[in-house]
Image (cartoon, rainbow, N blue to C red):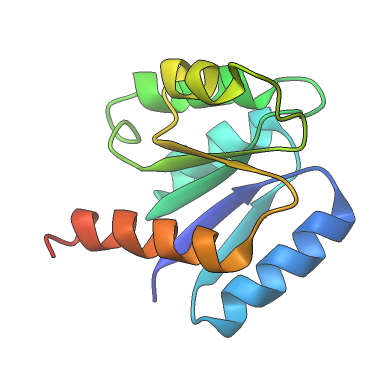
Length: 125
């Protein structure tokens, strides 16, 4: 079972998206802030990370930088999720190390397509 780490502080978002991902057969781990996200990425080595950018404490931008700077977690694909879709946010997220960007509210079908694309590449498909 492929493991997705979802770094998100909003309980409603966690509930909705994690349920839908689990129904698709993913094992979903949840971190509530950036510090916990970095720690869980290192400890669990998920197949993919969904990273909210607006997090309390250590934000998603810095959490992504830390994950991408560490050898064990560098190759894990990260899809940034942001409710604050401002001009330049996608580019800034990619510059911080995210592999893709999705504005909230997330369009689930498109997100699943992106997840499957990244996981297929990681598995050599």
